Image (spheres, rainbow, N blue to C red):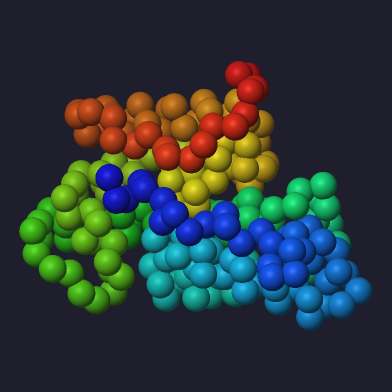
Amino acid sequence: MTLLRGNGAAGARATDASGASDGSVIERSWEIPDAFAVIFDRYADDIHRYIARRLGSDTADDLMAETFEIAFKRRRRYDLAHPHARPWLYGIATNLIRRHRRDEARRLRALARVASLSTGTEHDGPEDGVAERLSADAPLAGALAGLPTRYRDVLLVIAWGELDYEEAARALRVPVGTVRSRLHRARTRLRTALAGPDRTAPTAPEKETDHG
């Protein structure tokens, strides 16, 4: 369903017209700070969209800016063995979102109420279209609100951030096995809450071989 389906655009900008990888751009920014603007240009929209889906566009404006401010300050600590910076940036953004976990839960419950009262109608305004995506399945928003933060983070960084399991593990700084376990538990809890078929299977490719 739309809520847990990726936008298809993420992950395609790890190089620019010059062919420079994210890692090489970040390394260059160590001596030429302005070079870091390339990373912002590549991923700002994706990070903003992810945060807005979870917390709303007003909060997303501030947290997206804070994500890149933190990334810039930490750029010398970036592991250059990783050519793609997306998991690193999503990890920073997710850590910032955790500070607002109560706001996120309240937002999801409010969207569930709006969706349940307005199924089949058009939505305009502060929900930024999220209520439209939830209107066909209002209980899902409430079920997401009831997930522990650690489970919701894994589920949504994969579903909305379009990270695969290895990337999610890197973003959240947990083992791949923990990603698999938390995702399984999140899906199980959602199935129980919805008392219906599993509609939350991630579309991200499963690259890891770790079964821990």
